[in-house]
Amino acid sequence: MTYTLKSSIFTIFAIVLAAALVLASISYALAGHNGAVVTTDVNVCVPTTISATIADPAGTHKVANMFLTVDDGSSVQSENIPTDGTSAEISVGPFNADTTVFWNVFGGGERSYDQPLWNGFGGATFSADISAYAASVGSFAWVIGGVDDPNPFVNWNEVQVPACAPETKDECKNGGWADFGFKNQGQCIRFVNTDQDSR
Image: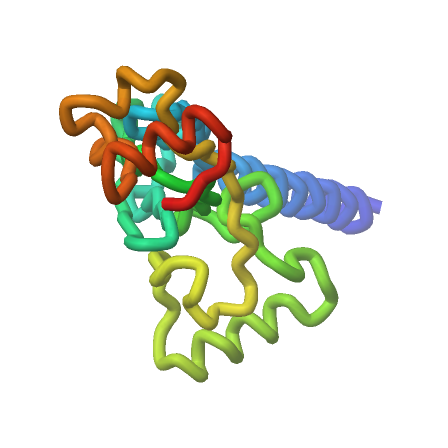
């Protein structure tokens, strides 16, 4: 009788301890690998700025290797996202043609509540597939070389930035045509008159 009681108490204690360990590991996983909050300030004739701030700067397990990466079609820029709550900021443009700007956040998490947006995340073979990709390239680089990088798992976010264009003929004068990317003043004025872009 005593042996059975002690055995039952031990079993209950073991179950409670196991449950506590499982709960602790879940909260740690959710608290760690903080994602980022990203804002885009789209502008037409001045630079467009994309900013990223760590989602939980007061968290106990912040990740220091998160990078904001922006590809504007002509260059790729990356900035480390600080863990102190300040922002990483990347500015691009203005552009003389309508431009799609791509951005993403790399590092810090491959989970569904983080950036990056992983193509195939949650699929049955995702872990094996991404491990195989990392092995094939010799390492796993968090920051990749823009939208042309061959990493098959990354889905980029898109921001549409309109072209900077003159609204009046006066904006084309005194060299203003060059600021809008026109070849000469006449081409700029023709755009204002006809709304046909020949840049």
